Image 1 (cartoon, rainbow, N blue to C red):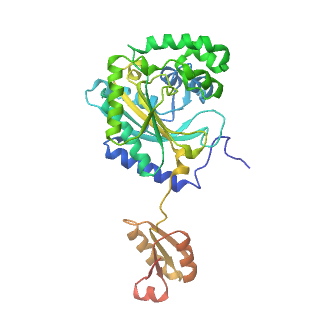
Image 2 (image 1 turned 90 degrees about the horizontal axis):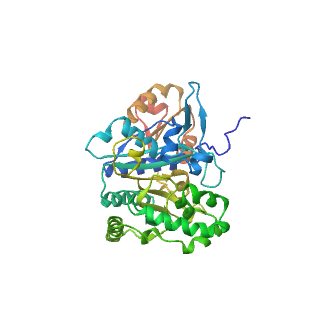
Image 3 (image 1 turned 60 degrees about the horizontal axis):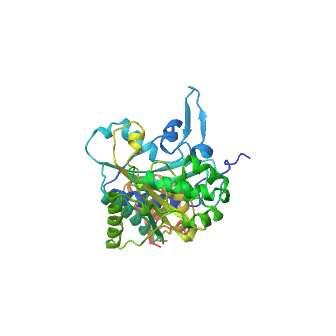
Amino acid sequence: MIKALRGMKDIIEDSDKFTHFIKKASEVSENFCFEYIETPLLEETRLFKRSVGESSDIVNKEMYQFTDKGGNDVCLRPEGTAGVVRAYMEHKFDKMATPKQWYYYGPMFRYERPQKGRLREFHQFGVESFGEASVYEDIKVILLASKILDSFKINYTLKINSLGCSECRPTYMKDLVSFLEEKKDNLCEDCQRRIIQNPLRVLDCKNENCQNELQTAPKITHNLCENCNKDFEKLQNELKKLNIEYEVDTNLVRGLDYYNKTAFEFVSTEIGAQSAICGGGRYDKLVEMLDGKPVPAVGFAMGIERLLPLVNIENQRNGIYLGIMTEDARDMALAKFNELTKDNKVYFENRVRKLNQHLKKADKLNLKKVMIIGEDELKNETFWEKEL
């Protein structure tokens, strides 16, 4: 028997939760005037090398990368933002003055060790907003994420940080590297490599010993320039006004090279060790890094598989069961099925069954109304009806 590849999963048992999540998250995003965008699963590898970063684990270890029959170096997308930015530039939105905001969902691919809540093919729901430099756009995007999670009654903690900008980050990086060099022998091999390639990522290491060593590391929030500090204070003040509880986590750096200023994560203790259920931040330099005009941008992504265990669907009956008790009733039932499906969810059982069998199946399918055609109903062109 041929089975699904390791880390790849059929969506069957949770398909109702999966489609419900996408539908609800899309509705909330559209209430914020975000429009839907869909980008290809396959992109040029260099798109992610230049955006996510050559030193990142995603590029170094996790991408599904190969040469296609045309000799092109391509890969399955490991995350959604870079592809959306590529589309933004390719369709020349970076040359227009009008802000653009999109939401998207779909599969992403990373070759990593499968575990609970982490697959090699996984699905994300995300949003990206281009053209607004104000911290109020950061607040709006965080508010959107919180409303999506609130709509499913998911308990979470919001963590925020500021990663600074090109003015204040270099000074902080010098202090951080000096600190890390002193601790180098006590850090894991990955962190020792990151000191040279991307020292900021050391702060995000999940190794417990590394985290103990980093407790006295310099804090980026203590080194912010006047503008970054002002924005970070405004972010906190406005979140308080919106009654969105948060924690400042100075080790929160997000794992990708393109972030600056605001970074945030929503975490939940209800799903085990992999507690992050949504993450995002501002990436004002990414469009420019990919050869576009400078455009401020901010967004987030949610891991749908991680969220599904926390999503509950109210078990309310809905829809119509349409059945027949005589062979001659099929044509009449089919005509009624055609009529009903214009405005209703309808299950059409076209096999002849006894009334009790129809009722049991309608109950099992959690349908609200039963409509049956027997011999008498066929003669009178009526239906036997019952609410469950």
